[in-house]
Image 1 (tube, rainbow over the protein chains, first blue to last red):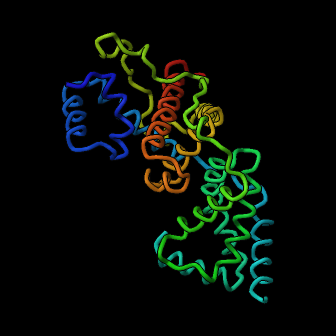
Image 2: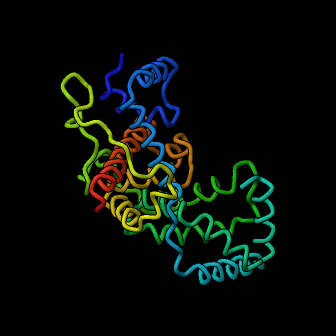
Image 3: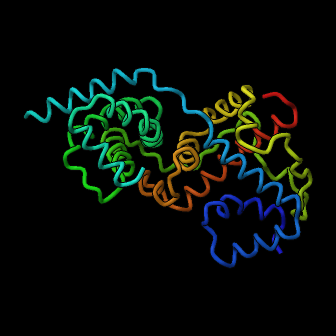
Amino acid sequence: MLTCKEQVARSSDFLDGQLNVRERFQVRHHLLFCPNCRRFLKQMRLMRTTLRAMPEPPIADLDEIALRLAHEQQMFGKD
Amino acid sequence: MSAADDALLIQRLLAGEQRAYRELVSTYQSAMRAVAYAIAGSRHADEVVQEAWLAVVRNLAKFQARSSLKTWLLTITANAAKTRYKHNRREVLLDDLPSPHGTLGDERFASDGHWRVAPFAWHEDTPEALLTENELRECLEHTLLTLPQLQSSVLLLRERQGLEVEEICNLLEISLSNVRVLLHRARLKVFATVEHFEETGEC
């Protein structure tokens, strides 16, 4: 059976679908018997969705960039 | 965005619709910046993004829906970055730096591989609840800024931009095993930050 330390080492690959069938089974098997590692993995998932939900910093000069690109495209289209 | 959304946006862009450009930039610029940052470094990332935008508008009419608009934009960005600024980064690829709240390291485990200090329950269990704490949000931003260049880029591209691991390998020309290592290290550091905050209520 995997140790907790080994489970943690594989956790990212587990979440990203990077493990083969056997490795995945070993992780699932470990989780079945280990509440600590179940909690750890749940928290890793929460951390990922939290990163995803974090607001992006606004783009300061958005209007200016948009204007320049629109202009550039029009000029370029004429050539 | 679906292929139909992409096609519609392209049409509006080609028609010169100002609002469409605003939409384009606000939707994709941060992903482009993460790619530029990964390849060219913080000093050149903004320049690379500007250059990529120009290449994008000049080639808009040539966009074919063989890939998604996002993939196309990120490929142009990666190419712009590689042409001008690719450092010889082979040696520095897996360099690591300490993070403000450390990581989840060997000291957390006993010699038999069991937890020495097990994860404890967090106060919040949804992203919304966690993010209502301004201080935690700032704390996370701070941790992200202290990650080594490639760790932070890979993490942002995967988690915030939702790219597949394989897409990240292709864009950044990094092997799959290295991307996996970078992602894991970055995640454990962010994990340590949230855990520290949940434990102490402070950054």
